[in-house]
Length: 154
Image 1 (cartoon, rainbow, N blue to C red):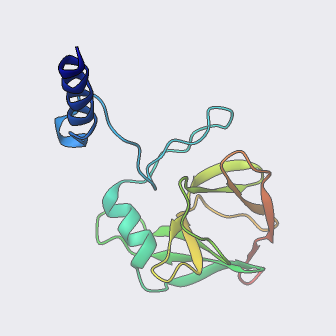
Image 2 (image 1 turned 30 degrees about the horizontal axis):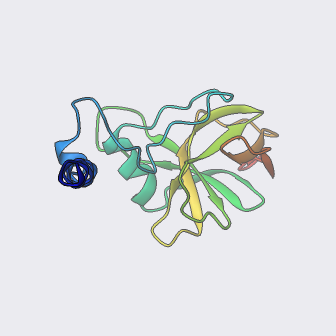
């Protein structure tokens, strides 16, 4: 009986130690930053990989709008598309399990893509309008207001 108990314990230990590679098909461990937004909030899709890389790392383009701790600029995508608008929100954005969501006038516009040194997040932006209210939220937390965008030259 003791030998059977030892065999069962050893089997359970071996099965639990197999890891992700041997897990059942369809079972995946969620990893940041692709974790889903909480169900209570409208999920915001992640941008395509090529667009996300451009939004994260493209050099600063022509500035189209500014606000407190933020700047919106036009970046080229090297495709037939029109230039892409990018909003950069400066601040402290530590790496966490979920993505930060950027909202314009209370509506989610995208997931914030952290810069390399984690001092800002960036997001592709629809055409900004002067006076648009920008905020950022993490998960189910209350959105933190950043300020209003003001179009350049207006």
